[in-house]
Image (cartoon, rainbow, N blue to C red; front, side):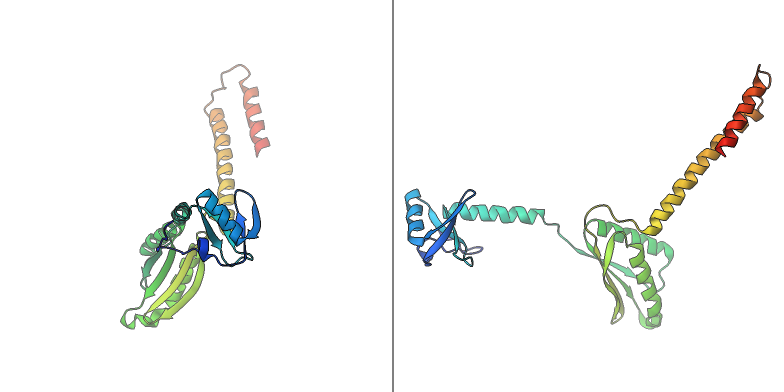
Length: 235
């Protein structure tokens, strides 16, 4: 058994000087005198490793210490790999940013938040433009409102020197929650689309009648009457 000077240190074998310990194994555990646990470890040719010193009694495992350290490093590596690295992305505005530039930066901010990054937006006041600080605040509040589906405001606009900052953090992974305004807009669009389709169908039937396709057919008047009747029912 070799001590690993890197990473957390664990008490092993004779370094464990409490009266009794809890030994954990595959799905079970038992409390026993520390001396008995040490004897069991020696008989198996492995070590007694204290893994939870603050428990009462301390929790130990009977395992090869090198193998135990390997398992701990592997587990830590796996957990690190699962963690999403979060960065802070900056978006800079002027107090009189035009709509084209605003929309361009808004699109980038949406992408940053969807990737799990934070956004720090700020308005930079150069020289006498500090007189427009209220205009800068309005711009940042508009920015926060346009991003409400993708992130939440951590800090409202605040002036620090010549910069006014706004901090937005991403919402939890998953489908962004739709605002009531967007749901109402989508509903109106769906209704408009359905009405347009119905109108197109009516116009198609009227076009057939207008073109006189049934004028010279036997029973043409009856067919036209039925078509008009169907149209009236749909209206």
